[in-house]
Length: 499
Image 1 (cartoon, helix red, strand yellow):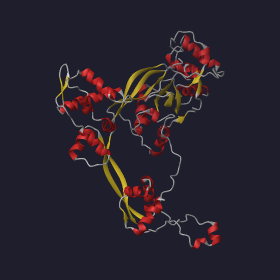
Image 2 (cartoon, helix red, strand yellow):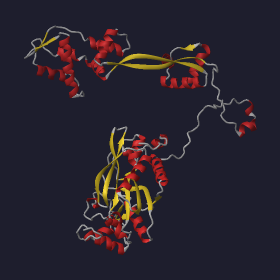
Image 3 (cartoon, rainbow, N blue to C red):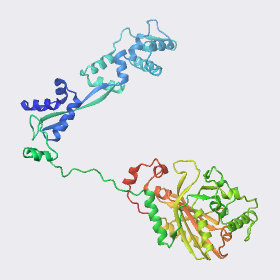
Image 4 (tube, rainbow, N blue to C red):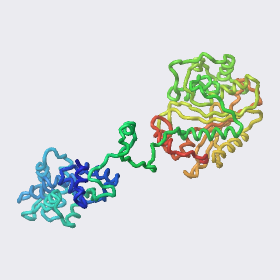
């Protein structure tokens, strides 16, 4: 109906000057008419030009004043000739308003009314009473608001006054003026989009008008695989390890026994990290049945009474604690397995690395998750010292773009000496902790069967922290987990390492 009205009108007239007036005359919804004009304009049947008109409309407060009167007039009318106390006046003003108006609004009406009435010199606020200063007033505010509601013109000074009181707000109306287009026709022809078998059989193809093919139109976006930022950074760190001559450790066991995760690392059984508040223990299977018994006996002895020059921890080591299964809290559990296997097959110097997921029972916030990725590297050889560890760390982190390093003494149950690693962050203009490191203790290495002159240096860091810095992400939940925005993966390019 709207399309026929537009095309039919233009057949005998040069222009539709205002789509709003046209819609009102023809009894058509303006929204429907606008959609039709846009469609006809797209097919060049008509040429449409935008029309914009601004008009003033009442705010919610303005509508209230237009209906019940301005608060200053309501307050003036509530003041009797003999005067009234402020408290009584406030009650009367509130009682004149309908019950469905909120008490907060009633209170504000009294406050606004008092201010405006005093400003207009209608009333006088004495210490004891409120009294009139004039006998009669006109509700000019209500009159102006009613005029605006009716679409009547109002002076600019009055508009400014109402606008300052936030009783009116501008509203933009959008419409079109319409003329015949280069492809105008009194009736739109239905163009064909496909050549069908029936068209050919009936000979209709000779008279068909086909829709023009738009060679510039964009097709549907192709959905291809995208690497997650963590995978991109992981790949680059893996290449750094390989360039330094490291080989990857197998890290496919997310479930580990307490023995390999804690005991083999010379971590005492009463250590806070072994509490259920810090570690996820399994209900099924709750315990492991496969441990090397001779090695377990040596670990038990080193914990209880020491050996190899160590006094041990001097407590009653319990096998049932060691058998408990858990979600590994660090990939160092994999390192303990690899070093034990290396000792059994005849020692040879090795460089190992791993990058995989670990689990800790931590409260989730913007920098912590219950699961994250740990990067770990270790070198096993004869004659290694703390100087070798510092040299390897400087080489490793320089390849990550971190050339300024500081080391701070720390404590780990399975390394001595131990060092926290700090790097200067140019963006944050401060030193940031980037990892932990140390030399594995003899109490950990010698029960495995490694030669006494063999040392192991190791270090570890998270994968999430450098990735968050590289991609400008300040909340770890935006990077990893079920709340990640998948568009982040698609729009982020590969970042070059360089923190």
